[in-house]
Length: 80
Image (cartoon, rainbow, N blue to C red; front, top):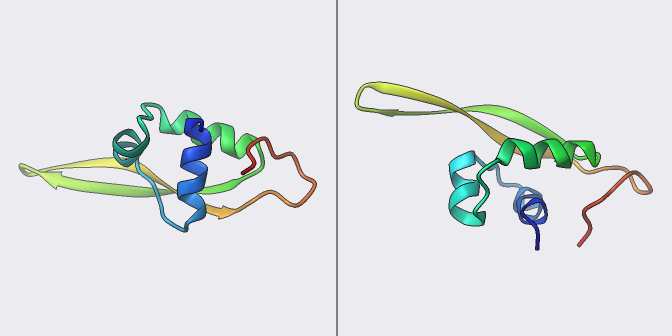
């Protein structure tokens, strides 16, 4: 299974995904690239802001959530 298929499967469960989570669960170093490819395949994916604080510093990162899949008969590269 490709990283794109694993990330899509994760998103289809209704969960969001962050870059650190994608690295930990799926070995995906470039989540933004995977999301770009999924969007190009017709999936609507929302980008949310994530943040974490440590030692008085706040780090911001993207969190992605699937909002809709391509219409039936649309361009869909990733099927299960």
